[in-house]
Length: 513
Image 1 (cartoon, helix red, strand yellow):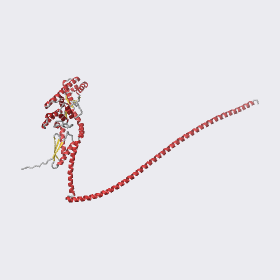
Image 2: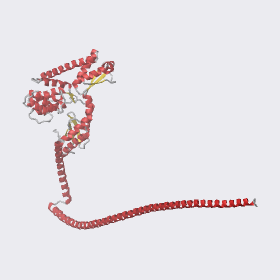
Image 3: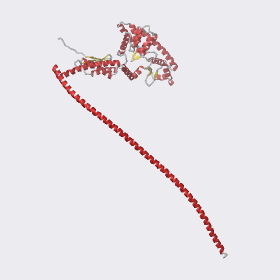
Image 4: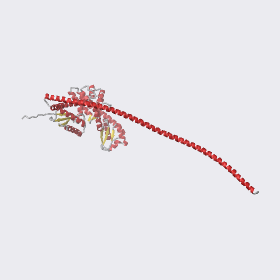
């Protein structure tokens, strides 16, 4: 019994311990469950709130997008409606405008129809009146309408030809008055076309040498000799592959002559170095200046001109080294002076004054400086500067019509200047081109209907055309002259002007036996 009691007590104690432990564990589990339930409730509440907020935000977002879409659609509908209204308005306006124009056209058509009816009626009346007048005129004149028409046509043709020729002559006269500007343009264009050739002819001198070995000596070490020579003379020296020749290029003929003479002395002497070059060039300048003065004095003595200013004498001497169109200026001035003296003597004027003006007429082409003036005006100013008489100064300035002529010497100088320049062979021209131009002149005239023969005379400055008298009348001859001159002017290139003379003659030949 005593042994069973502890066991029973132990069992009871175990049961009580188990019950107490289970109660405690149950309470602990209930506390934890409560805590977990509270935490789950809080989490659920928070999730619920978050979901509600997200749902609200999504709803608001969808609502705003929906409103935006609806607004955009509304705006598009409003735009479409406004465009539709504008189109309707424009269409209505166009319809109104079309209706108005249609009405106006209908009114105009009615007016035109009425006018056409009036015109047709008046035409019928006019035809009747014209028929009556024609019948009356035929009765009065005893001539049919066809004959009268042919006669009237002949009269009108003659009048038209006369008026045409008169109009042509008036047009020519007007053209002469207004041609100054066109002439300047043509001269400028001509200068542009041929300036290169004339520059080559008038700005270049050729210095001949015995052998090409001298070229190296003229050039010198590192080109010092040729640079010194160019600096001293102001002339460009071209040493190229041209055999036995050196080209001297410069617009000033005096400088070219100084360079040529200096180069000749240096080559002859054999001592070619910069110091020697400067010495020789200085001596050559002095020598050439003395020769120029001596040439001027000798020319004045030969022509019998006295009392000329020393500076004018020097300019006359400078003319020797100046050319114009290939004609030496001093020779041209001497010819002009002699011609002026002869013409002045025939007219009862002072031949010495005319000779003096003829010699000095181109003095403006050889000034020391190059002012922007025509050579005639410049020559007149130079002559005035050195005490020449007013008559001579005016003759110099007016020989190219730059100023008004105030005395009889001026036209004499002008004429004699032209005579000297127009002398065959005075101005350089290639023979082949000269002959070709004459042939072209003659063939151009012969190609015209009614022309029998043609002759180019006066060095191509005049064309004599002989026409058939049976085929060409006097009025037609004037027309042929005009047409040939126009054809020459349009198709040919020539210096100065070409005079076209048409000759028509009738010959009656009989023999007395």
